[in-house]
Length: 262
Image (cartoon, rainbow, N blue to C red; front, side):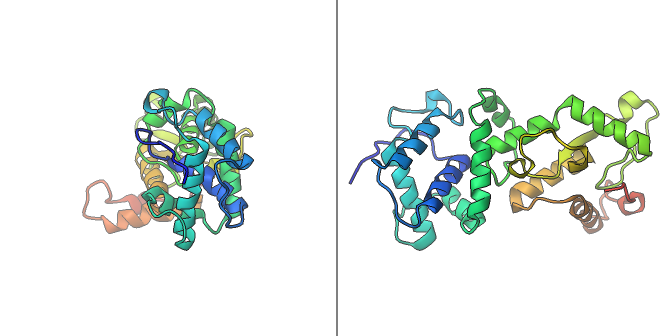
């Protein structure tokens, strides 16, 4: 059996396992060896990504044999007939996407479209809640949401309609100084990056949330794997408030909640 000599290399990230799953699902259950052109191609891609810093790699990092072994790991999770030393991420990725080849292909394509950006390493280091699509797309999601241009356009649109409030809890700024009153609002993308694509963000695909609700929504996506539309975001926040009515922050949220047009 081929040896990967992979000791000392970083563990496979969620992004890398998704790319390997994409190849696995295209192979029809037959695992190609390290000499297969498809495996060599994926190995070259993985070695060229900036997901792991160069200082954390040894020479055998994601070599073809290692990629082939990872496909065997995925096969073990899928059928119980591959290599047994599977990881938690292998199991999580299979549970989330093993029966969704189209979605896997969509996510893999999106990862490859942005993963070569050198600045992603810094973005990923700041992320606490990683979305199901992996750290690469989560980093880009965060970067887009932090865009001053997007936030300004969203606030401007809401100001024209007279509905400048949190789409989730209904919070309305109390401070009359606009420079301070609007500081708590953040933009939140309602679609995963793989589905939204690389085109310019549409304001109709963005919710306006207060910082607290935004953090809770990101945690929900990370923990449950469920992307929330605007209606579900409202339901999540209001239900959480009702459960915690004894808390001083939660009291009155239901009274302040109202339709914001989303």
